[in-house]
Image (cartoon, rainbow, N blue to C red; front, side, top):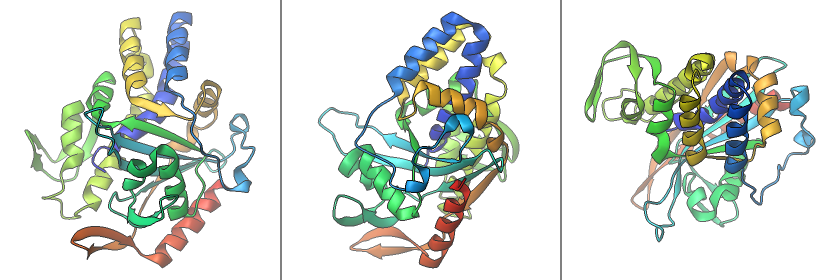
Length: 309
């Protein structure tokens, strides 16, 4: 969960790079188009909810996006990758609202297609992107239209390429090599990673890092509105595009990204956050997070309500 900020970088990328590239000119647009083609991937996955078939981004239909932070293996023979961060979003231009759900990585749930119950972040290790998507869909009882997947090892580069982010820290704490003062602070890539990793001193336990993840995500989104300053030179734009190309994969194509930038920006101005209510249990000497069933039914109903058009 620590690095979930990365994911939202994709939506910032969608908004930021398209606007910036269009502003700079044809060469930048060529760079952007090439990079976006390279980050797009095809997987064996189709939306399961008929209400969203035929979604038209150009018309501003409500959509859902799963943001996935992936810890890729350090070695080629190490195939045990996990989704370190999972954040589900609904974007509704009609109500100009976004709903954001942080899913605890230790959540005990059915791993769809694997025939087991396990921690939800293991779904990616067992079956890649498609299994992770199906598992999250089943868990939330809500469909997924699009996904954005980010290699967590590139997190620091992504934050650094947008010249860092600004957040307001609710209390002073130390994590790793950094001490974070209470109040407004500026974070570079390495600092931002430490900022969201802290859990031991957090009075909210595991929910503290989730809150800081969403805080950083919103800071990245706000950074998107200052894109003219970030793309003031071709070299800076090339650096941003290269960082995204190296670390991001998605099922969004270039036209869909453009439509999101054009029609969904207002929805990002009002973000409502949700937490998964539940409790921690120990099972076979392993700790799991078990959601409250009634609260999950309520959350599922609310999320689906945001997607009706």
